[in-house]
Amino acid sequence: MEDLTQGSIPKHLIKLAVPMAIGMLVHTLYLMIDLYFVGQLGEHALAGVSAAANISMFVLALTQMLNIGTATLISHAVGRKDQHDANKVFNQSLTLSAVMAALVLITGIAMTQPYMNTMSLDPQVQMLGANYLYWFLPGLALQFAIVAMTAAMRGTGIVKPAMQVQMLSLLVNIVLTPILIHGWLTGYAMGVAGAGLASTLSALFATLLLWRYFSRMTQYLSVNKQHLAPHPSTWQRLFKIGFPAGAEFFLMFTYMALVYWAIQRFGASATAGFGIGSRMMQALLLPAMAVAFALPAVAGQNFGAQLPHRVKDAFRHAVGICCALMLALTLFCVWQPGVFLGAFSNDAAVLAVSAGFLGIVCFNFVPSGVIFSCSGIFQGVGNTWPSLWSSATRLVTFAVPLMWLTAQPDFYIEQVWYLSVTTVCVQSALSLFLVRRVLRPLQPDTSSIPTSAS
Image (cartoon, rainbow, N blue to C red; front, side):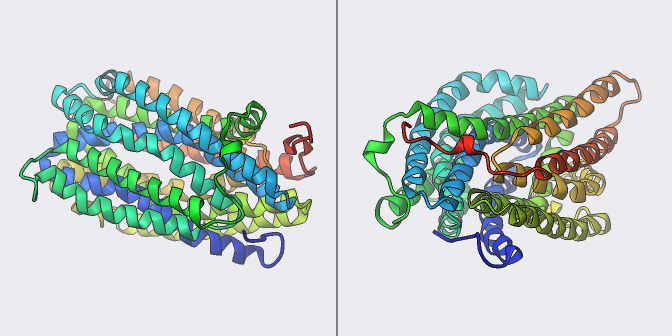
């Protein structure tokens, strides 16, 4: 456990953010590696996997309920020096992760084909996407256990072990993906299904390593059979903070699904191009996301320790760091929007869509850095509802004009990218307004502190 209530706030943010950025890059590389090797199978395979992988945003929305709830409550408990409550939250998060994983796996298998039918009009794209998703779903289900354990580490201010595990699992994925896709060594080429299976096996590897860490190596948090039994009041505390954050990511999934729906009329090359461009955008946003994900641990511990001035300082430093990083990446994308895209496809139409997307959407980067920082401070103080309202406003202001645009005879794909930039700027302004309202009267929320009866 690391005490974040003392010392330099920028130093704490950067110290936490660097390994977290590496860990998130690893997560993004999972999908990018799939796209790289699947791209060798043609544009239909690439389009199918791109559309299918979007379902990970939906699962991410569910994992965020555990992620944010666990990290926030544990950071508050650490700030209060309440190790017993931190351990109880951790173990209940593990129990919830098992329940949610089972529900996602069962529902996902049943909904795979209807989902792909919505994402594309091309039967071949639908079939290939479904084949990938059936093998990818078990790995998505394992993300719940991974998130529960890594969020607990983050709440205590420890992030390096999670980064190391994720890097090892990425190496497993890199080795297995071409072997399973092309049948190297095995003699059985699985195609797109091999990419999904490789991701699932690497997620299983990460889960086992993290479980070993908490079973044998950690001292502050540990697996306790007595605390694993379902405890409704702790679940309620987790969902009270985690539900708005999860709903916010569900809105992001809905946004992505709307884009795929809107551009499907432009063919498989547009679907594949957007898939590559959006993954590249996620990779470029990682530095700001890492700082924003470090912010709840710093703000949360100081909030639990009743140090509101340090909470406000943490937000100001996070915004400054995020905006500086994102400005540099915006200028880079304006200069060279297609510099990395050629590795994923040699189709000129696909690359034109990807480069056009990045060249416009890069103007989202700075306002996105502001939004991430605002979300981080909302999580840190345990009030995640304002972040949800902000995201819901963005979705409405995007979806309604998009519906109108798609009905116009002169609708063209770049209009979707311009609309995205406009709505992100609106969301950024609203998020700053809501943060000011939350921070002005900042006081610790005693409702998140358990009574002796609980």
